[in-house]
Image 1 (tube, rainbow, N blue to C red):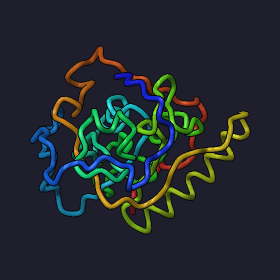
Image 2: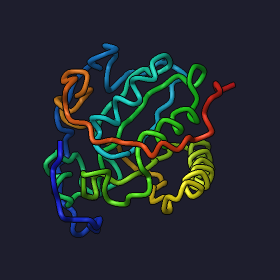
Image 3: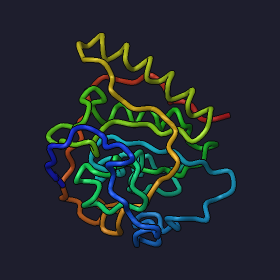
Length: 218
């Protein structure tokens, strides 16, 4: 899934591609769980959004958590272009990055556990790339959906930054901020590595443990 782009700066709203008013087509159901990708979701469930490089491998990291995960979905967020296509995002002219949406049961699995999976599954110090994948769409990001997620994400960044520094890593470049919209990616991107087990995955963690997220929400 290596789409090489030399653009390493995020475009302004004026520079971004115009996009389209209607969502692009995507799958109706999760390939593994069979649950509806766009809902309705169970009462009491929560959503989380993470960007950690190529979303093929990133999405797999979260569905592999198993119990408590209702669906995962690949998509785009963090930019300016409404309802972008994959090709537009890869061009670097939308401002979006590749992200994973997780719908989960917080009674079974905590947001902190999702944060642990996020931090340990990639190198958050690499800026506009992840391994050999270069471009703004591969940047590390957490997009909190409420105040509690915001606080937890920021606290986890502080703790993991200390752990990384102790092992000689540079500063974390992860973007943590609210975003207005998540856009579902095309059908063929959804649960890609379940459909194509030998497919490309460029993710690689640092090997540094993140000491949060082992508990279950009260």
